[in-house]
Image (cartoon, rainbow over the protein chains, first blue to last red):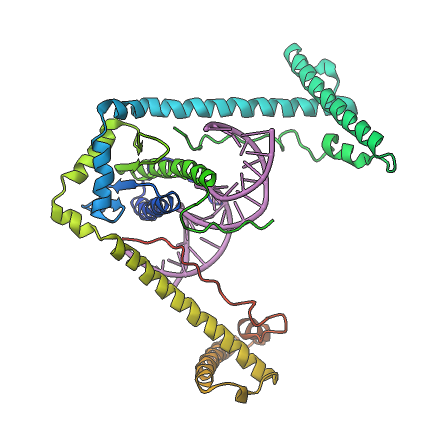
Length: 202
Length: 202
DNA sequence: CTGTCTATCTTTAGCAG
DNA sequence: CCTGCTAAAGATAGACA
C-alpha cells in the first residue's frame, strides 16, 4: 500500500487535524526539550489551539517560561525589527531558496539528459543531426566536461602507474567512474526529483 | 560503520554543540511552521542562544508573535498555574510513564524467558529442579497461559472442523501459532529493548 | 561558516483495538 | 479519549568540500 505524501496544507478533515495536532504538538515539545537539553539554551514555546482553552507551553515551569518571554519583550524595538520580517518577506525568502535549488536540479537534469544523448550518439543509436542548435551547444559543453573528466582520470592512472611499476593499473577503476551506461538506464529513470519542502536558516 | 546513538545530554564539544544547535533550531522552526500550517493554530517559539544576541523567533512576523505572547501574558494566573507544573513535576511525570513502560517490557521479557525455559523442559534440555521456588511459580503461570492458548486454539479448530466436514483441519495452523522454537532461538536473542526516549503528552 | 551527502535514527499518518 | 503498530517520510550526526 502506497500512502500518499502528506501535503503541507490545512487539514480539512476534523478528526485527522485533531490527531495530527496532538501528535505534532507533542513532537514540538519534545524537540524543544531536546534542544534545551543538548545545547543548554533558554527556549519558549507557546501553542494555542481551539482544542484547549489554555495554551500549551514549554518549558513547563512558569518562571522559566516567563523569563524567556520577558527577555524577548524587553528587547529594543530595533533589535526585534532587525530580526523580524513580515510574513510576505518570510515566504519570499523560502521561494528564493527553493527557486535556486530548483534551477540547480533542473540544470543537473539537463546535463544528465545530455549525457544520455551523448551515449546514444556514441552507440550510434542517435545521430547528432537530430538535435537543434541549442541542444548541440549544450551537448558540446557536456562532452567537454566529460572529456576533461576522462583526462583527469588518465592523469591519475598514469601517475599511479609510474610510481608503482610492479602492478598493472586496474582498468576496472576506469570502468567504474566513467562507465558508459547500458540499456537499463531509461530516458527518465535517473532524473532527479525536486522538493520545495526544505528547512530555512536565518 | 555503526554510528553511536546520541545521548540526550549537554554536548560538551563546542563545535558539535553549535552545529547541533543550528540544525535543531532550524528543525524546530520548521516543525512550528508545519504545525501552524496543517492545523491553523497560533504558535510562538522563542529561542535564545549564546550564539545570537537576538533570539530566534517564530513566527517571523512581529505582530503574530506579539499576539501569541500577549494572549499568554493576559491569561489569569490561575489558568497559567493550572497548566503549569514545575520542572520537577514535569520530569517526575516522564519518569512515571517511563517506569510503567519499563515494567511492562520487563514483564514481557520475563515471560519470554520463562517460555524458553518451558521449551527447554519439554525438550528435556533442562530439569525443572534446576529452578528456584519463585521461578517455578512464574513458570507455572506461563505454562497456564500457554495451555489456555492451546485450549482456545483447540476449541476453534474443533468448531471449524464441525462446520466444514469436507476438509481436514490444517495442522500447519496450529504449528504456526504455538510452534515450539528450535535451536536458533538463543536465550537472549528475542529479549526486547527498552527505550526511555518517549514523547510525553499533557 | 555554509552547504552537501549518507547512514541511521525519529517522527508520524493511517489504521485497529 | 488513549495505546500500539507499521511503513514511509523526515530529521540529523558526522564527515567533508
